[in-house]
Image 1: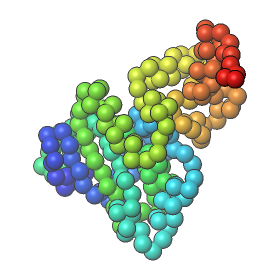
Image 2: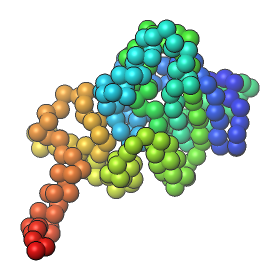
Image 3: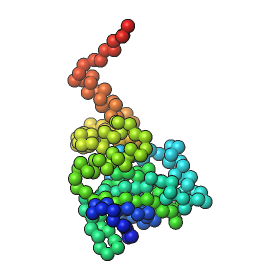
Image 4: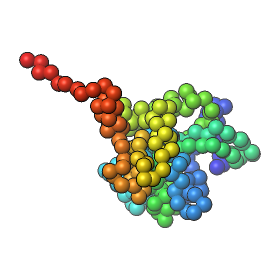
Length: 213
């Protein structure tokens, strides 16, 4: 990635060619690297109204406007080194731009001459990282539950679920639709809401709704 202009010792921003971003998000077997989006509040949501519009822009005659119409991609790297006009990053996550990244990957044959706003931030401070995740994702309508998904306890709970092997394993859906494209039975997926209901039913007892009249 060349041509960054430094805004601060830990922050860089530029408009990048979409084709130059593909190697960052593509695994050795040619698939999208889903692990890069673990810190993103939502997994890929499929082709809803917003994502359909992004796809339509790539297929249109005005794809050159993509850079003006898209919020872009934010990457946080714990290691960032600059060599001349290039930057080397390690231990990085895409904390905002999961939808854009997935659509660019799935329509890579349509991204020639497409530019994408890109922010690259270097920090190993968890508080700084969390504040950036929250701030960048507040540009779109999110629930408090979705913002909570990026905090430490849900991440630890998700890792706990992963310690169980089939046939005893169930899947905690920390981020919206994170198992959307994986061969996981829907009956084995536990959403955040269902997890709360189970906790209340088991440890806090039944909930009674009183008639205010």
